Length: 183
Image (cartoon, rainbow, N blue to C red; front, side, top):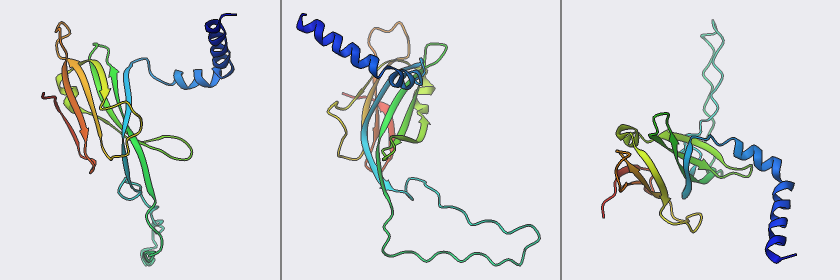
């Protein structure tokens, strides 16, 4: 058996053995998602990420004299739980062939990635773009520096020959900027 044929047969066997799990995962991705990239990094404590503390139960109706619960004393030894993750930038094709671009903040946890927040980038929606590509700043893997940078290539006229570049930048403080790329 030729080495290439053996390698192909091995890969096909591997895919068939793990087929149902892969098929379920990939079938969850909408067919309208034309570009998806992940990158950048963020880190913060649970409070700065909008995690809410459980609320104290409200007093029963007619129980107006119920004392307000005393706040728990702050623990000097317990540090806020640090969380970290990355970002995803996604172009979703619309029925008119234009695209909406979404930014997601993903939490990396022991149980797997979780979406913390999804926002539509209105700067793109306003110009009704035809997204032709999305590229991360680099493709070397997870960044150790906080922030995110990607370039979205788009056309506002589908007949245009060259696409425009627009940058999506998230600084180390979590501020998002979307602007036309300048060279």
